Length: 412
Image (cartoon, rainbow, N blue to C red):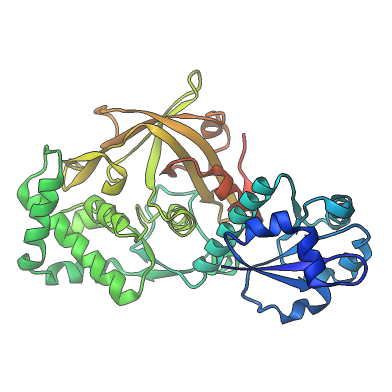
């Protein structure tokens, strides 16, 4: 990975002297990056697509930064180790930038801390770049009850570089009827053997659900989709099966896939995949316990990779088709959602998965999470229904990513 540091230093610029004066930091950065030190007067030589950051190497550079302000990569980040009055200069520069209603971040601290911050910054930069030109398939139309989960395709494309593309439900139905028994029988058998158990579902229903998975997988290939959201309730009527199994397996394969045609949640799932490389669990907050600061998350599908073991069930609302009841190991989790019509707001909290429940009044996979942020967010100022659960604590990385992209946190 390349890291181009745009060097602002007082006096005569000599790369060898700059390197020697800040060697402790640079040596540690070179364990992760191929480091390029470029004087600010030569910054136009840096390829536009490369990862770059301003390095304040000394005091007395404030006027130089103001004069060459246009070369600073946005969002503006100033890296400084504090040597030679560099932090003092960075503070003055930061105040000048903020006085013009622009955001700026200073990376400063111990060498390990600075390196960690740069790594987080780079992960966020790389994820944003990888999102560009991703294609999100919207198969069918969003569920009628998702009245607050609309996305403006044009503004989403301008902000994130993604393309939402509408695909008729008939496209999947046609592919469904073209899938042969030979294509689904062996995989259905293997999937059943992986399960801890099978409850309400029948072998015939499992075959139909596996046929739908194969059909959607074919549409993904034909349409070059990087992610998809499925109007699954429409298919229950026409194909007499549910999309829960298909979405679980697609997420297992690294294709973010969401249900109910939720345009905001599928973008969140895609962000998680590009930023962290993991699948997420898209779920309904079903119960909130303010006294314990807990939320119960439930849905009828979960990537099997997230579960220690799983049970093949039928779909909760319709009592038909196939659903997945995942049993997930307790531990640290992150709850995240990117929302708003322009995808410019977000909710984020770390927490701890404390229990898998099995209530008859909720969807099949049920995970109780104790949050690190106040749970009354859900009752006072929520970003809609569905939220995404990720195994592990990734709040620092996601926060960096959303802040780099000028998104607003949703708080109570």
